[in-house]
Image 1 (cartoon, rainbow, N blue to C red):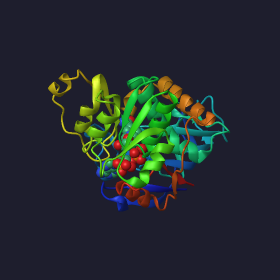
Image 2: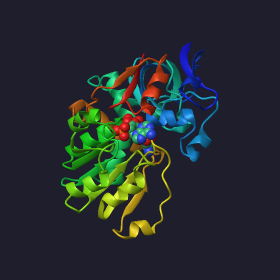
Image 3: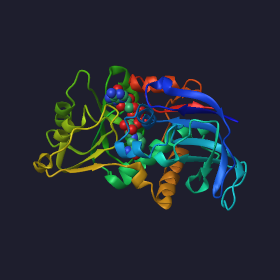
Length: 331
Ligand SMILES: NC(=O)c1ccc[n+]([C@@H]2O[C@H](COP(=O)([O-])OP(=O)(O)OC[C@H]3O[C@@H](n4cnc5c(N)ncnc54)[C@H](OP(=O)(O)O)[C@@H]3O)[C@@H](O)[C@H]2O)c1
């Protein structure tokens, strides 16, 4: 049996109930995994309260177990599984159709697993992999960050934000990060932000344009949405790009293409389930992130650690904007 979080109806953090469930036997192409660490992502909050984009909510089974990523040990192999054996340490970072990581044990398709090298700690992998794979797609494929670029990053002290900062800095870019409060400034700086704007007391458009001496940034990475999305366009240089990747503060207002005309801007919405749909691409991203963790280029900082029993508190902390870096469940 496995302690498992179940949501029967979307709502506040308390809709997450802990029950005992039989994880079942692995089917063909599947393995049975015993989790050691689970990543808690803002997307989990969206699914739990029903604020994920409509196309994602439409795919959500009900009742469901939240959670998109975990690390664990293989306990049993289903028929036809190759490349893995019982006892291997593996991880996955996945999408809506394979949601269900908030559990001690589950079956999972072997095709979407990667080995966790011995030099990478379970909690670090759970803190960095789902977000890291996202960031790999955003800085390597979506907009290819290069030396000399100037990046505006919203919610720079958050989980994804910390990784974007570290990665962009390692690529030779200058990162201007926003945070909501002064307590987050040092953390954002420690992850590579050269300039940190505290949005509760500073106008991020004015500060960004001052820092870039009126030129604007090459790219904006915005996972905040409602509060920052439209204003961020005023920070972008001619031919620059807006990469919207999330909506922690709520859905974005619609964009009239004419708004992009003045500086001939590019707008894209990053989608993990699209960028990682092909197995080879997903695994290549995962390998690059694991290598970066192994080399110390990507660091987990100080992930906040929760138990499965108190994961509702992790969701509350997210919604209170009290977190810095990643959140994980230790089993
Ligand atoms: N598209 C994809 O494939 C993909 C993949 C991974 C993550 N994401 C998205 O990336 C974003 C970051 O994910 P994460 O898990 O690393 O979370 P996070 O950044 O650690 O947490 C969200 C941050 O957003 C800021 N925020 C602004 N308004 C907020 C509000 N009303 N409520 C809560 N937070 C608010 C907060 O920072 P301040 O208080 O400093 O403003 C908060 O720390 C999320 O929107 C997530 O859904 C998208």
